[in-house]
Structures are given as structure tokens and as C-alpha cells.
Length: 103
Image: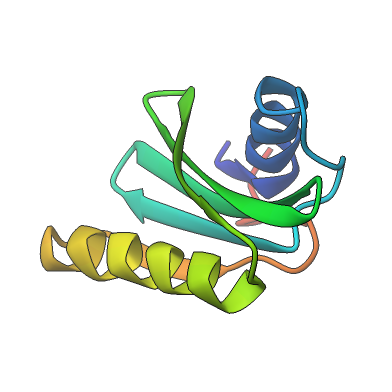
């Protein structure tokens, strides 16, 4: 049985980073390489935004700023570096569950 639980990854990430951020990130990106999963998210925080990068399930604030666009650039830089290391990254707008048809 092979199931891909994007909902699990996003809910785990949101629970781990729920401190000062809103419950739903402004932008959320999921990057995978085999069984390795990295997440990048931009959250509203006070009057600005914060970019959170999660590696091995450990979230870390990697940037902040007043403008959403500046945090999106931070996210794009991380995405570019991950893709250079053969990760496959894509933005996630909603959580979904997919199955290959097996049990």
C-alpha cells in the first residue's frame, strides 16, 4: 500500500510552526527527493512576514521582512538550491490524499 499524505506533512509542519504565525501560511512549498521531505512556508507575523524552512521535521526561521514578495524571494532561493540537489518542489495550495489504488 502506497499512500502519499500531503495533509500529514502540511498539518505536521503547521503544528510545528504554529508559535507566532497564522494557522494557514500565505505560501507553502513541498520539496521531495525519495523519502526526504523539505517544506518552505511564508507566514504572516505581526506587520510583516516570516519564512520557515523545515528539514528533517525541524522548522527554522530563515528570513523575515515587511513585504510578502521579499519572503517569496527567500523561498525561491531555497527552492532553487534544493532543485540543484535533485529535489522536486511544488507549491501546495490545498492538502490532498492520493492513492495508487493498492490497499
